[in-house]
Length: 358
Picture (cartoon, helix red, strand yellow):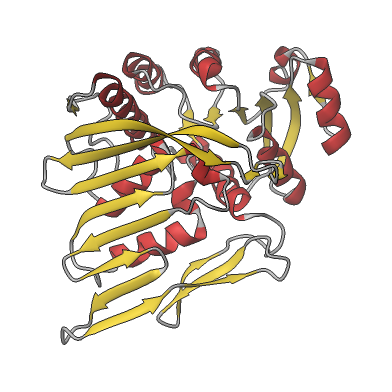
């Protein structure tokens, strides 16, 4: 694999993942620099990571990177991605470039009709624990999967995982949802533990997804679940012959005798990253990078960055853009269902059923 040269537009928390990955894997990635508008933030990035920053993104784009990471805020993401695509740059969007259906269709047209190169860095299906459980669900020991309950991830992240387990492509779906608000004590954050015990009101969204093929999913999420010692996350996947309940797998053996077994994550000694995940004495996930270099999140994102090489050369996609568009579209439907209090049905979109890699 050739070394990939890339630039970053944006300097938020997620943008820093790409910096750390490039520094951990210098033989695979070369970071040309980061476009940062605010001088204070640019100085922070220079001091913390020792990287090059530019106030004007054109300076970096003039060096013709293999791809550009769009890591700007959600409101600006669509316009940034669109402008880069229209100028012929390959783009790896840190989050879906929009959750507005019309904007998604415009971007899809830029790629399919005008030759644009766009990928989305959806990472959770590449996390060791999710990747392992998806592989187990595809092995057949659980029978046909009919139902997913997920209370762990928000919006498009959750929809990506739901569709991976249900394995039903872009099946038409009806969504019913409602939002609730509850007080909860803050205990953790991106910056570390919080010990003052202050309570803040958090929104929790619960939704039902009823697919046309009869499969269902139940979505339950509050943002506090990402960083909390008192709010857990859960996943339950039910098939005709077994289920996944968080880390426990229950299933019927060939002679229909029941069996239970947990998946086992082998972690690095410093707890940074997972070496492999075992189930039934066999590895159902193995880290593709040297252990201890990257966190789980960074490992997943590194896989997506590396996949840009194959995508640019062959068009092969690790997370197909069609899937990214569908997951973003379902996010729009979820938000509409919450806002209106009505059941919202999906309608055919130009990217439907144009993916082979679920």
